[in-house]
Amino acid sequence: MEKLKRRKYPHEAVKRKADYVTALAVGFFVLILIFELLLVTWLPWYLRTKSIWERESAREEMVELLDNLRSNFSSISRKYSGYQLGQISIMTDCLDQIARYLRTYSEQLSREQIHDLYADLRSIEIWYNRMRIGNFNEENVKINPLKFMTVLAEKSGFTLPPPEKSEKSNGKEEKNETGKTE
Image (cartoon, rainbow, N blue to C red; front, side, top):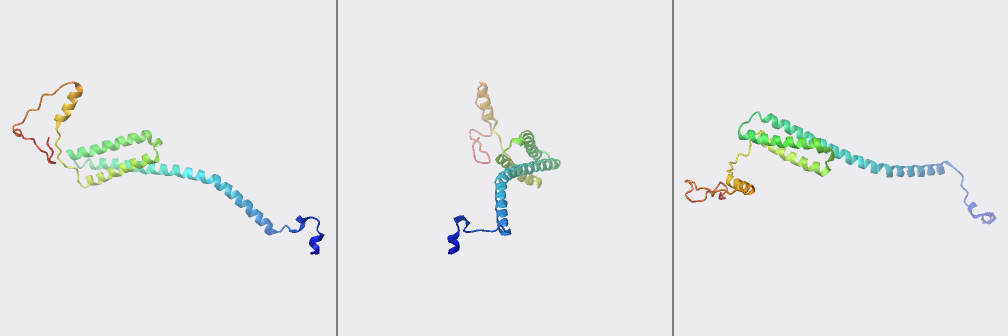
């Protein structure tokens, strides 16, 4: 107790020597502070860069699938003719239009738009796999041109004469394969 009473100032109560433990603690504190500052600046930059690369890799994957489909459809078009070749050429034309669109606007596409286009290309790939093994859409669909011609005539300002009844129908309504009247 005598030693405590003899001191004039209270801050002299705990005198500490500068040793390696103190220097190490201060060094670790400074390193942690610098690491936190780097983390605060580097992490947002890294996440922004990563999202850009994810978008670019998704876009590249989509373009690669498009190119593969275009080459695959052109290779199977040599095997078929008639309406089968017509279905293949419709798919090829769709893929060509998508390719033209991507050539023009691929840089402006958002991640959602890339995802939607990729999903469309995957469905076209399913069609390709069906067509490759010869499974085409072979439904015989009858088209009634009268409805189309009536709408065209009305838009043009003309009126069509009423349709003549054929000898086959004898006044009865014809039904197609689905049971609907034409």
